[in-house]
Image (tube, helix red, strand yellow):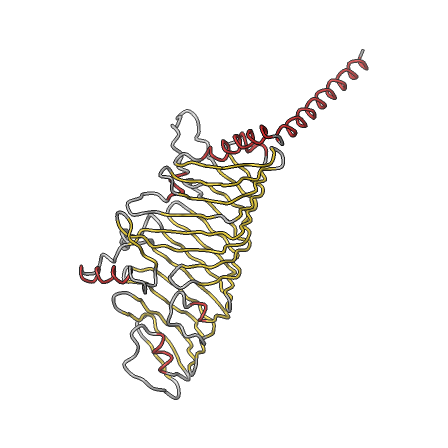
Length: 409
């Protein structure tokens, strides 16, 4: 009896296994048919769009099956006003099957071809567009814990991408009305360092990143959550237009964190055409210190460090840096109420006829202020120093020998 029972159990388990195998085979075959593709499209849209409460996910066509992933064409994620957040000519998504029925989307590999990403917060908006699109508006049941919807991407490959970031901009409210009008006219001119335009309700500043190619990994996208979204940049190249003058970056490696009130950046490797740097910093987007006017643009606080810096690579940041200047320094860039501060520490810079060593800072606002100056120059060419200052120097010529300058600390 016992042997017969064991035999029946084995046959039963074998039958179940065979049935499951046949079912999987059937699903695999069906998923490759036209109706199967429609099913995959429906389930993919339902799964990926589950987190989209303040917008709409559109896909023109899909190829693939449930087990190998999907190739989508004409992908567009937009807000309720039809304004695009993500647009891609095509994308390949390799995901776990459980993603189709789970609030936690897990994509093991995504390859995006010619993606366009538009991140903006317009005058009068309380949220960034991606925060509004992914805001959880479902009624909350107090008896049940809220399910956190997260999208995990193990690897993302980007081919010829574009990203545009737009933030509100206003003239400095601490200035007189006449000075604010002058600042606005300068910001809207073709010679303004920043790209500022007029929109309904005010003004915006635009930053463009083009020709993006590279790989991201360990991406956790959860806007609005306490821990925020995080991105590891394994390798990224492209062209950045943070100010009007663009700059080519050959390789970036680091991490980006998108938190509720700020964006944090830590990039230990940044290779420009003739320089190697490390960059870290924060851009505050919502909450500001009490001394900072929150009606102004977001506050930036960046630190750059380089042992081999060609200052021509930094002319996008400050056009008056000499082409031939080269050296090492730690450079802090901070957006203060009085203007944009550049503070160089431990500088050792050589330019034509000039060798500068020490610390040097200046704040560019309605007036030029020098801060924390402890600088030695030996030799010094006045024309070289004059070239780097916005308003020049009251003297001209060549100084033979050295000079020591100390100022406000």
